[in-house]
View 1 (cartoon, helix red, strand yellow):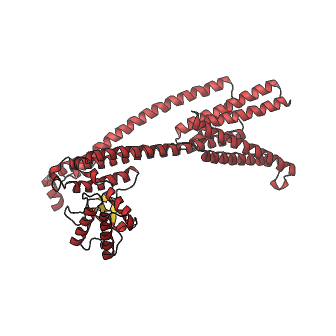
View 2 (cartoon, helix red, strand yellow):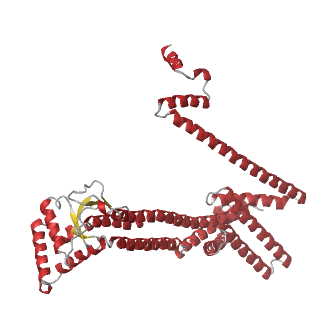
View 3 (cartoon, helix red, strand yellow):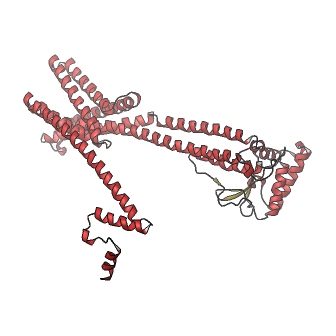
Length: 479
């Protein structure tokens, strides 16, 4: 097989391996995302379980049976909010850490102190009164950045009446709006800047309903988890955009290779580039155009076959080469440049050569699991060996090479097994060494002393230099 042919096959298989590598990168990214999502789901469900664990011990919840919902609301807000963040791969924002159980704030959100107020009310007036009472007890709370969380349904109702025309308000609504506006003016703040909706309604955090609330949230979390997984899967699918990139890159590479080979061919014939005629450049241009076209076809076919059929990239590339080459031979036969026998022989040889190229690339990738490099080396070695055998060896020499290859395969298997045994032995010795070292530095002085002696023996220290007793130590330091 000519060096030019080997170089061309190697370039073709390099393109195939590169496209296959792009596909594998997409798959690896999907696997990583799904693995991360597994952890996100576990963490999110764990946060919801904390709420269940908390309400399972009502004797530990502050307040009477009528007021326990206050502390339940705090846990619901913290852990449901965090679960919603975590399931989307975001960091938890809420925490109880650093907050005293009777502190001015109930929890922190990204460092901001928040007081939760949950009081029964159709329109939220009792809840707002509780905010005013809290601020009276802690006048610096909002000045220090503090905010308030109130039931979601009450917050929505308050915002609704604040935006209504006064003529449309009921008497109780008008009274609440007046109190809020006075409060805003007195404290120099806006209600919507300092009061936020909680994740739950007032009814959702009662002792008799909170477990149902958590169950509904768990179903919602799992639904969101599935949406994220579906999106990751959709994003991992092959796309026309990526396929177009592969096609253009393949066309450029193969066109550039065709250009270089044709120019090299003319230089080898004794011409200098400065002496190229118009016909020479025309010949180079035609060769480059053919290479570019074949490269575009190769890129499109490999991308399509590797993504939509169970075809290895090396085989897909070989199929393109064999198809283009056979069609070229068919054209030559049709116009009378070659006869029927030449057409058959040339087509068979071409098919055999590309098969050797494909198989060598696959084996190279197995032996050298580095993207592109394994395919390139495997193709080059396989093609060179095939070319040497085909062009220079008779049947007896081919048999000798075949026997040698079998022997080498057997030897490789033997060495591989021996290598595994030696690695296993090294691992065992290393574990033993690590264990001795660990005991040599034990906090128990007696254990450490005994183990230090064993460590010295294990590492080959001269027996005469090992201190084995108190007398040995005294003699060593005092003499």
